[in-house]
Length: 323
Length: 303
Image 1 (cartoon, each protein chain N blue to C red):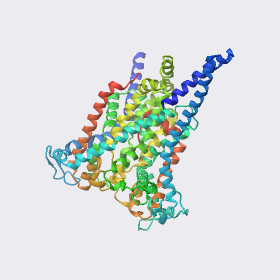
Image 2 (image 1 turned 120 degrees about the vertical axis):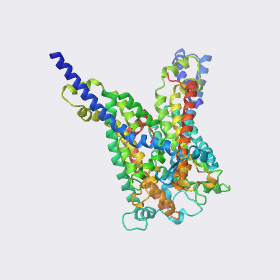
Image 3 (image 1 turned 180 degrees about the horizontal axis):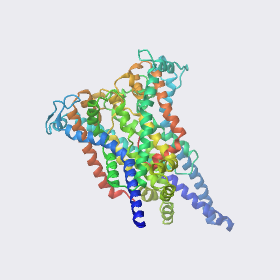
Image 4 (image 1 turned 45 degrees about the vertical axis):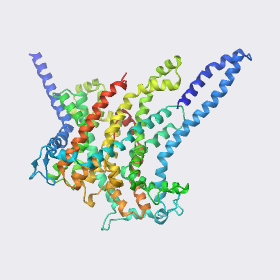
């Protein structure tokens, strides 16, 4: 790393020296030196670039090779996957793994486990994501732009929730949900999120604080109410930020493992992640099917990530938010 | 007369603003009260109670009994050791992320593609990714043992060997977690004042010196943030070891503190000791965070 930057610096110095040397047009000692330096600088620069690319490509391979093993395994036959002579590429390409995993109904009549898991996941994740986003944004707008009593207390209260490690809440939450009869239903995974999330309020508040208050004053003069100002002015202005938060929330919910593991014991309500985890046992002898399940589970988040990458990375870079 | 009317109108406006503002802002706070505050108050009580199953009927107060129970359990101490060992990945992540993010600030082609690739693991489901690594480190058919056999080595039973279980979890943590640091460092590095580098160059500092004396201090708030969130996240590790081995891995090497808590609460139905464990972990996290903040004054630079 050091060499590389050093080379670049040398090279910059080179460019500055070059015209002077040529203008002198004398085979002086300095010019000779400068030429040597120039050549070695160029070589060093190329070596430096190659090294940078080498490190970056190696790091990319470190990320991608494990994925490729999963993908290629998913196209193998079960026999080939269970051959101690591992081969990277499938000898006979087959989609039987995908067929198996798509038609597996868990020994019961009805929908395939994977499809049901996917639908359950969407049912459990989408309503709280949307409603929570709405509530968080509304609250953020009030905290950023409206004057009301107890604002600071409420806000510090909300910040407090971000400090508490989630694990402290596990046992008492489970007790409460058990007492009110929510265990074995998706409600514990849905209802709390509908009220909004502290991190989202925090992020959106910063965003709304940057919108000029004069805009709100003007709308007030036009006779708009406070809610209408939020809905007609603040929301349209903050679509990219809301989008980023919504995507983060959706992917977090989609990938959640601990929550469904705790609360959903009825296979009827298994989410995609829980169903996928169960494939470990189901497909211990049919690894291509297990890997096909993993590929299918990964595709939605990967597609969202690639399509909405800009919002996604900006959302994280500016808020430091974790999934 | 007129002034009074204006005053009254102003007051009415302020009232309306106050009421609407409060109502709009209140919903997430209400959610926190219902699903955060009530459980938290209960959590304090539960840690000092003997509870049968998942109801408060017949629960008795046992003082510090639950804490004693947990602190006298050798598995609890083992779980702390395992968790701390696994959290090594948080530190490796920071160093790797800084190196990669720094290289990405250089003039090179394909920056965007590299960045996109590095961040992929972050959006991937932990279950799918864990299945992936389990397959790669499979004892008989895995790619890693194939390579070892190919070069004439002795295959290792990675996930059933208590020596190797945690190193593989660290490897998984590094694979998944570096992208997040790269993104945050990327943002921080572009914000470093470039005139500082030029000044350093004029003063004759080489690039290693300017990296150590300008870049590293300038991005120290990001390092601090990554350190805090990384450690807090790592201390609450649960999913990966539990997916690999629901029984806790070879010789209970996979039992993290949260896994221990999960076991006591949801496999042995002992909510009291589980709640005590949760508080011990929370206190541990709090102490670490306070120490971190105190030490940060020495090395974090907010200018």
